[in-house]
Image (cartoon, rainbow, N blue to C red; front, side, top):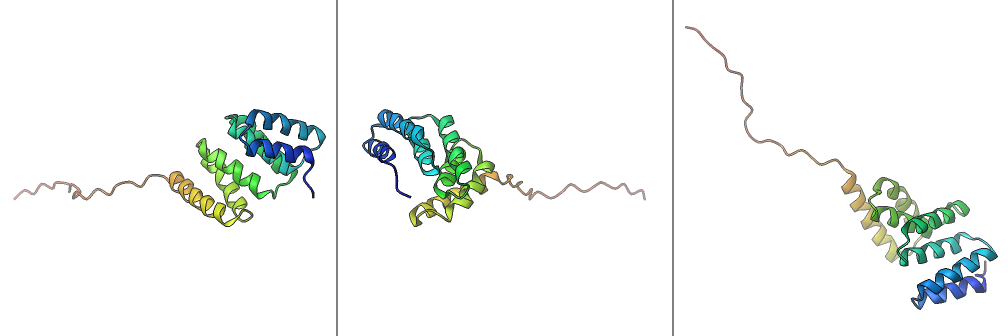
Length: 140
């Protein structure tokens, strides 16, 4: 499906680092019609603006429209992992990793590895001291 001109304009503004203008352009594009791709891009611009709650909603909306939108899944997973919500992030990262480019796959796999490590309960240190033995009393 071809990307509408309003969406392309918003992308161009974003690429030029004109974030405030890009956000307005993404809003205009959304008024013309929704798509998972557009919501993903809108949410990415929200991240760039530091609006993480809005970004989470946008990535979520992209996934509502297309549950198999790998880039939105990865983006939401990265956002959640960054906010410490590791258990929520892991299934999104794992599911989305298959549909992104090779470079992103490497980053996602590393992030997944770190999430898993941080979710494991800490291992107890083994006490290498001899256990005290109960004392016995012997009467002779």
